Length: 126
Length: 408
Image (cartoon, rainbow over all chains, first blue to last red):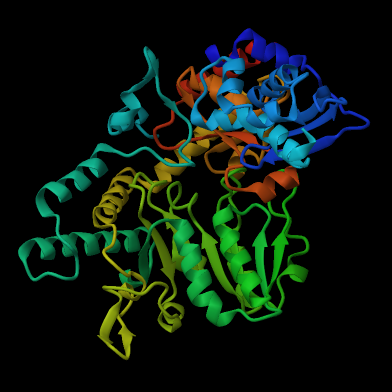
């Protein structure tokens, strides 16, 4: 079945960047109350305000959890501006499977968490 | 025993394929039931032959439309054994029935410090309207908890239901556990302390014979679309003296007797609560659904569902990693709610869908119930008069395949 291609199941079983950062420049957590997916992302920036370390924790469906792995892998080294400009389309492309509108909410929860967290920092810090 | 294969031919949608060569296995009737041909035809015929506004015109079509619409109300009254069809208020769905009572009766009868008693297994429709009312009036909400088997824990009923309780509202059948609650006993307990008692019958009226006079409840709400009828039509039943004392819910045409620039006087029951042009075709469709269910017989439908539920619970319990929620089949309506270890219910629902199996995943509009269970969501298969054991077998086979896909 397309939406559960091997990579999605692999990531569900063995997530990437899973865990917590002891010291983070921003951390944010949000859930999707409709289905109970929850994701928390911690980000540590370097001197140039680029993503030096990122970790995430959460639970939920395979799509939401695989999405968090793919997103956190992709943003390493990015600037805060890159994070803020990261589009939903780009994340959906990374996931690479056709998703119904209902499942897009699952897929995009990680991005919402990341960008809400990033928005908590003053914009001139980039 | 029902002739299920024959019944299935009454429902056009049951012969469709959801994907090429994958027939539909519809196990989501607790969300909404499928519609028999006779209901679809009755609504179609109304629009082709009769369509006119009701209670307004002198002309022939308006008279026919009004007669058909009011005749449907009488059918519904007989179906639930209401004393009179004027106590049958057309609403959009059960949810609107609860809101009508909360706004119209509640605003005039609930005061600060009064208590509203609900249960922890309620659907949001029988929770949120009371939350809004309690917030507005400073009333206190209390809840009857449920036991691990999904039945109500009535051990502390006496301390929960007191003279302070002005309203007691509960579901006859849980939409998640399928639990059949002891309605008569609960209504009696409510009346013993002087409370007004409302029953959520959305999962009861479609599946079993309901007699409002035997239950003796003060209000009862249910939806047409879960009982072979269309969406957009539901019923609020109320005792006459309560309905007569209540102010209108919404203002507009049809609910007035006389309007002057200074004010208005209200129409008689039931139209006092039916402002504006109603869902005429839907009302007629619901009347036809009532005829259809009656022709098969609610007792037969109920025993078929008991048989299917029993079969489903046994078959599902064989699936590795499954947790089933709710009481034994003998105490429940046609619902089987479960989780599979290591899989989110959304993933389960999505995978079995590819085998044509339609089940619901989520919190089923009962978030507090799921919080109590300690799970964010569950998967739910629900049954009706057209459900077969072969469909249950397909669900089970699909769940086993799902576990394999997830390497469990």
